[in-house]
Picture 1 (cartoon, rainbow, N blue to C red):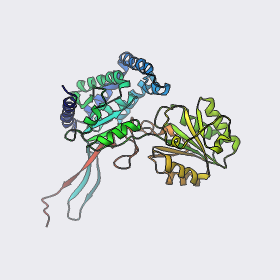
Picture 2: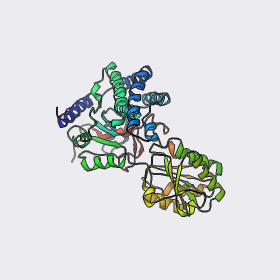
Picture 3: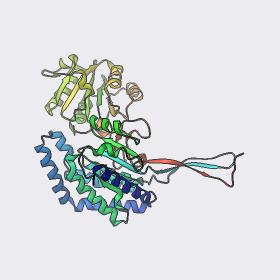
Length: 418
């Protein structure tokens, strides 16, 4: 079978499955989620074997340590997936949820009702936990999902999809509700995003090249999970210990993910000793710093930050440093360079914090908290389908609710329009 025919067949199967899962009772969907959670626990050895195969290949291919970390499924990360499945199951089912109901003066009752989108295509790289998160949230919202993971996680993704399809089968739900594209050929991506008859929405999660490929070829709606160029601004009124703790956590806790900070902005009037301590703490954690002229004067040996660096998502232990003149300078920098993912201010001054929160136009803005909290699980969504940097339909961490649309339901009593 040609690749074109393979993609068309997979898409048709997904559409057929979506027609059945559209009206699946909450009890059945939740049964699948709980079964999948149990299978993740029972099949740890199988998952570990598949994941080890991917890790060996990644190291042979010369992937960086942070990229290998993104790929690795530790017991802790498997437990997080299990927890996420159970949390999604515990959430209210968004399908059928009625809102904005009103009765017109003529007695006509009009309401918006949440309904599934249909078939969702998720294109992603590296992180195999996305496989389970996406399958769970799409099912909860009554959608079928086509998963196209990266070649570096091929065996891990297959193991996880096998588990989820087994859970679907045990509950009598069509297994084609969740499908994994079996080819790693990049030519599949343009073919997938042109399936206008079968796929309703594409969500790409990955680097700039992937996003561009999807956008240039798509004939279906696209909701972008764009790169995370996140900034942390340390204000002159910041608590020094808090500022250091947040700056280090935002960069170091897990540098290879989209909500890790890439640039540290320092208020020009922040105590220079405090600034130097923060920078030295980062360096002691292995972070390579790149700075402007003013920031390079604070600690010796800092590399020069080029213009392009401020636009860069390093996904590694590399961080830009820039000294700015107050809140306005931080806002100006973020407006120019941020990818509108997540940006944070550290300060004890409420007025300055509120100015930052009101004027920074990102999907998440934070006050005295690490950018690493920009996450569906941390926001109480159980899991996330991605973090949308778009402004239309959904923004920020997306849960099951964001994987629905709505329809108008109008109820009359023989009403006719005059």
